[in-house]
Length: 276
Length: 166
View 1 (cartoon, helix red, strand yellow):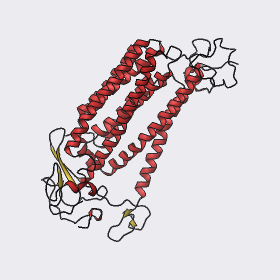
View 2 (cartoon, rainbow over the protein chains, first blue to last red):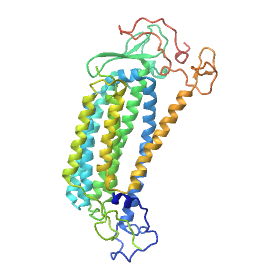
View 3 (cartoon, rainbow over the protein chains, first blue to last red):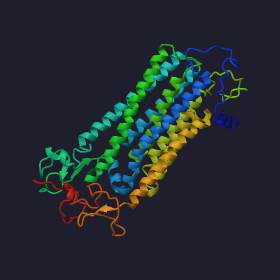
View 4 (cartoon, each protein chain N blue to C red):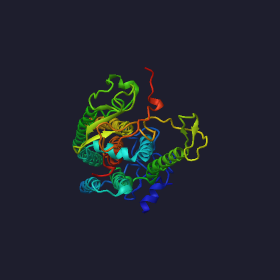
């Protein structure tokens, strides 16, 4: 516990005692406005954690929308979530958790100064990210094929021009055979457990949230991949050492954030609802 | 005056980065714990706990998130202030969700028959109002096509949102 209290202390090192306590000169990785590598490292980490907080708040807007719409329409969320494949979602969860493990191990080996090992772990992490996106691609295309994409079947008048009045086009159904163009459309489709379900027009909220939340998450996966790729490049050029591994550490923190968001997205979208 | 940048007191402060390094076995153990919790959350989703479904799912998710943040993200061995920055995000998020929820509970609805916005609980004019789109009206007109379970309903005509001049 003593460590924790100690860690809470702010830096008292602003008085520039640089040079007397540490005999070594400014290393090349140390920016001139920092006294010590540790000060630079701690400042970078704090900045990353503040950034992570803002990322949580950005996703927070969507989680808030989820909470509100779920509170308003629990039955529709219950029905619509059967269109998400639990097994694919769980597979992706394990893939992301494994990539988080390899990211943590990449930080560990770069802390120990093992360059090749760090590269291997970073490559595995990026490959896991690719696997995640491939699974996501199959999930997305299947849902688009069913017509669950917001706007296609779900009653937005400016999208329904392609649908013939009174006729079933694809999986979109019109409520009244003689209804005017632009009236809400129902979607009839086979869900993941093989049941035919007819979703009311309001189910678009669930799928809109699904696509936007997982879509924003997928964008973060792409960004995380590029950050880890950049770390890999720098690591292969030999820019990291036992003394300086900040970029790998912060890149891994970003990757863990991607994992954290998915840890909540998976149960909220795939698992919540009445089992059959 | 000594600078206390190093939060591990294992050697004298030389200004270098001394971070805690856990063993590979430890990280693998955390990963296996996370996988077990993932399997658990999928398994329990096949049981119905009624309204507690979401609480069970969120509890397990929070345990997983706790493991990731504490050990993979090194919060256990990091400066406490970083944890504070992280936790504060959830604090602000809960304030955001609670205020939004409160606003929604006090909001009036658009009265399509008489116009204006009316609080459905009091019947009096009130500020705010969500327009009755297909996503908010209580009944979607008509019955589900091809859905035998839904009984026949009296057609009520189109919601004003859906009207279109032809």
